[in-house]
Length: 298
Image 1 (cartoon, rainbow, N blue to C red):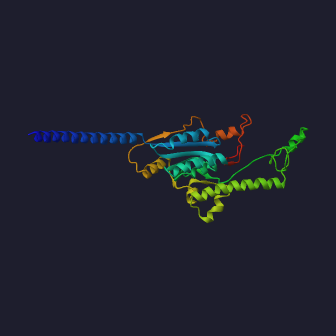
Image 2: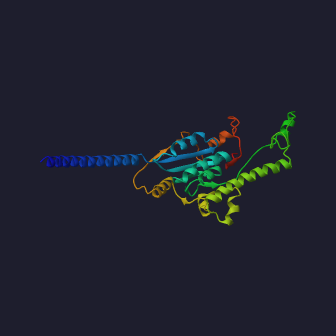
Image 3: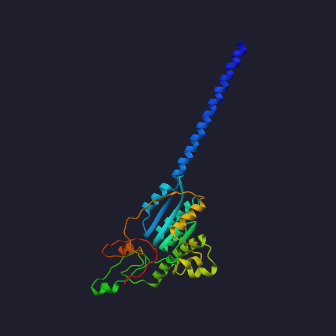
């Protein structure tokens, strides 16, 4: 009788334990499912705007670093409307985005102009879109100076220069640029140019017969750039985002978060800042070589 009682007791305990375990597992499954839905609802595509002259990326780089390891970040669309900037600033942004593109897809949408340093940044993407009339290319480097010796002579000023070597502070606007100095500067320009061209050939499949054409500094329309394989597709920013969603196998709507909104009024070609940089009224000076294309202003 006692054995029967104990048997019945343990049987009830076993049933209670099994039920408890079942409900515990059910609760855990529900919790995980809810968590997955929450994460899915937090998924987003980041939009980065690269506009005007590329020369100070500190704030933008910091914003990118805040999101690059976010599990909710699924991809990035980069909108470029820039004639370029300094070589180092363009390289810095390229390298940061290129590193991310190895883990998460990046698509570029070129607007009116994405030339020189602007095109360098575009090379970081897994896919490049632009419009038929987008101006791009300008794969080259520029350094500009002026000689004002004659002007100083006219106003009675004679520069006196002391330096440790004849190539120190070359080019210098108050002394003539000798052939040795010109050759030294040319080697620097050529080296920077080769760095740029190497990025192009590493990231784009350029036919050997087109290398000379794309490397002489000329600009191309979007249609010309597509024929040379400098870009992938002719299309809008929406087309670029659609490609990104397709590559991520995203069917439903997903949030697109701009991480660096631009609140400045720009002119139609986005060169307002370029004018300011070279304006004597503002006296803004930028150090470094330029990977830059810009039209002349009469």
